[in-house]
Length: 100
Image (tube, rainbow, N blue to C red; front, side):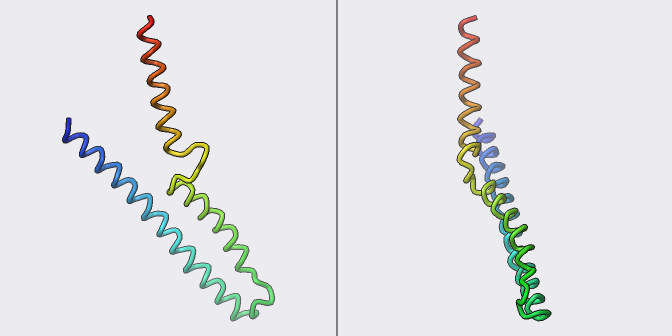
């Protein structure tokens, strides 16, 4: 039992590290690509029209949603809510079986 508990903790930690790696890779890509686009924008028209901001804005929205998911910042349906709801439903099911 203890061995499976340690293995379960290890797997959850590994999944968490994978989530963090994906987020930081996405963030790093965002910084590099948007910087390159800004440089191209500057070299071609010296920021008379900053078209690179459209890409920065669109991808930035994606980064924000990725951060919300990765760092459990969703106040409504985050992981804590999910775990509480599962426990609540399991308790309800167990209580209903007792009275049958």
